[in-house]
Length: 246
Image 1 (tube, one colour):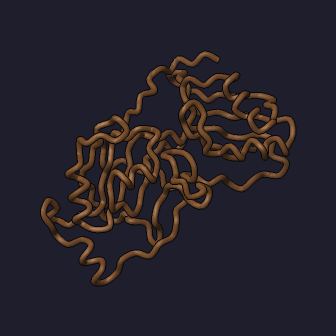
Image 2 (image 1 turned 180 degrees about the horizontal axis):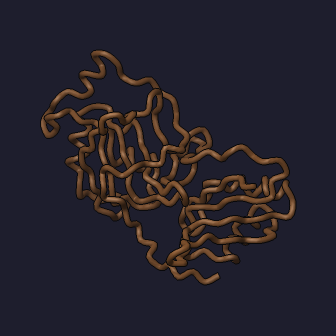
């Protein structure tokens, strides 16, 4: 089908108070306690309040855990900010730094380029009642399914698949490029030797604009299972999000 939506720039959510997607897989790690915690949030030059939570914006869609941690040494946690319905990455994230000094150094890099984009970095203290950083968690990117390569924003490892229904024949597909069409999605699933029975794209009710997601139906449950193995794989430059559907 022809999709009317053409604005697929790497726009980010500039609001440090934006809500990150919490439906994500994370690695376990111990959190600092007692004296270690106090030292972590110690006031320092460039960071008089000892803040270690940062907002990072204007990120490229191809950013991943490894590249962001290389750009900002000291990152211990990452929460990619994504659309909860479509899984689309907004080009921004919240990160936790290992010390207040590392946080100050990171904020000082605001305006520096990562993959050709001038990155926005600023202090973003957690609001009262927020659980941050996630208890006993290291990172939201990658996870056990990433193969150690570092999770890509809005893609691999960001959201685990739900429980598989019996004899499942349909998959939800999200975080799609606005340039996707039926031929493109058919070829994508053909890479694992499966044939699609039908494709249904989702559109906004009011505007009719493509929402960047949809459903694909297969002829056989085993083909559906094969198709699900493509969760997190790149399609037209974006890591596709796949989940089971009734």
